[in-house]
Amino acid sequence: MEKGLECHAWRNNQAIAGISKRRIFAVAYVLIAYGLFVEAGGFIGFVKSKSKVSLIAGGISGALLLLSGGLVLMEVPAGGYVGLAVTLILNVMFAMRLAKTRKFMPSGMMLAVSIVVAGILVSMLMP
Image (tube, rainbow, N blue to C red; front, side, top):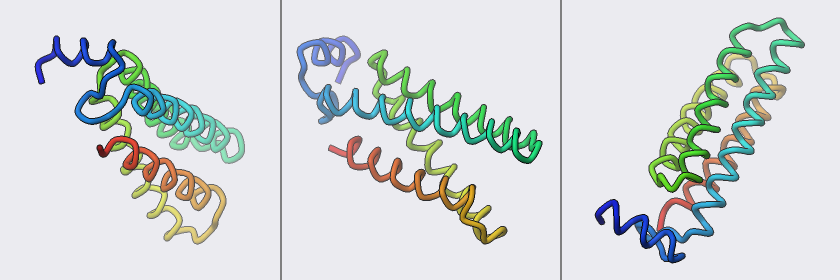
């Protein structure tokens, strides 16, 4: 579909690449909420453990998730797939961390949330 047709279809509440406008906005809100959650987790990790790695990783990945949610809101459907990719990378990172520490908090909780978010994104992005 050409770019002009995509925007026209979007503004007329029609599906873009098989995804409705309502689902696109739901994807954006999930990505923004998850991005804020990841950033908050990085900040809490820094405050509790003085972990600069948590602060930097949470800030960067949270910012990427917020950016992808913003792209979706700006009618760039690829933003949802970028957010899904970041979520899947975080799933791997949190799973590795959980396997190493064997402690549910914080990596197990973040893994559980990441799995739920990945499932929501996949179900919403796949027509």
